[in-house]
Image (cartoon, rainbow, N blue to C red):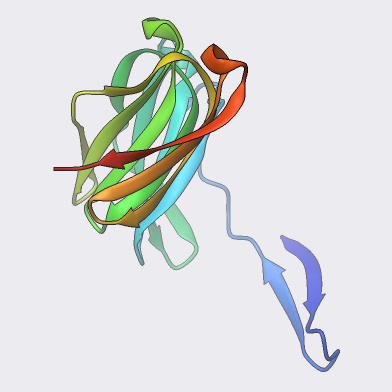
Length: 166
C-alpha cells in the first residue's frame, strides 16, 4: 500500500512511505491501543480487550522485515482498563498507565517485563486515587517515568506525577 509522498523542505528529495501487510494481534475489539518500541525487532502493544471483559492486556509484537508476528497476550489488570499508554523503560521493561474502571476509575500503572516474546505483569499500583482520564506516560530514565493526565477528581485539571521504579 502506497501512502502520500513526502518532499523535503528544499524540494530536492522525495521519499515514499509504504506499508507492509496488516497483522491481527487480537481477534476482538481492541480500543485504547498504545504501542512502544522495546528494541529494533520487538514492541509491546497495550489495549482494552473487549473480547475478554475489557481487561487491560499487553502483547509482544515481533518485526521481521515488514512482517509482524504477535506473541501471546497477557492480562495486566483483570478489570476494565481504558486509555492505556505504554512507554519503554529499557529493552526488557515497560510501564503502562491507564484508567482502572474496576477500581473507581483511578489512575493506575503496571510494570511489564519482556523476556523473549513473553510479557510478565507486576502488581498494578494506583498513582491517582481519583477519577482519572487520558493518562499519557513517558520514560525519563530507566527508573523514572512521568505520567500526565486529566484529574477529574480535581476539577479536571491537567496533572502530572513521577513514577519511580525501585
